[in-house]
Image 1 (cartoon, rainbow, N blue to C red):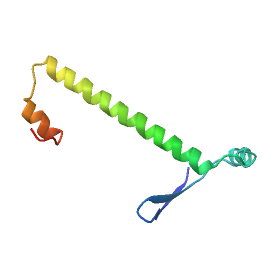
Image 2: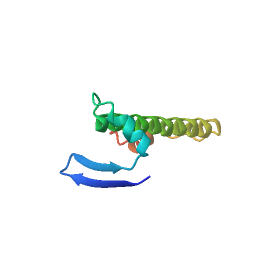
Image 3: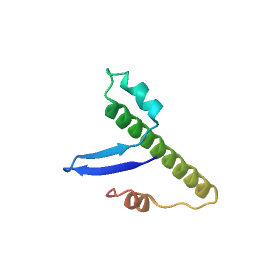
Image 4: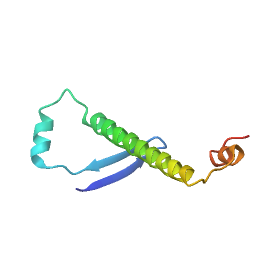
Length: 85
C-alpha cells in the first residue's frame, strides 16, 4: 500500500492511498458516495476502537496493581489525571 500525506491549513490533511484497480473500478460505479467521507469515517472508527482498547488495557493493569495491593491516594490520582484536588 502506498500513502501520501499533505497538510492543508490547520484543520485538514490530504491523504493519497493506493488501492487495487479492481476495487477502484467498483468504487467508480458508486457515484452516490463520497469516498473520502467513507475513508474518514473508517479511520475515525478504527481510532476510537484502538483508544477503547488502550483504556481497557489501562483498566486491566490498574485492576492487577490493585489486587497486588498497589494503590495511590486520591490526590495522586487527581494529579495523574491532570485534575486539581
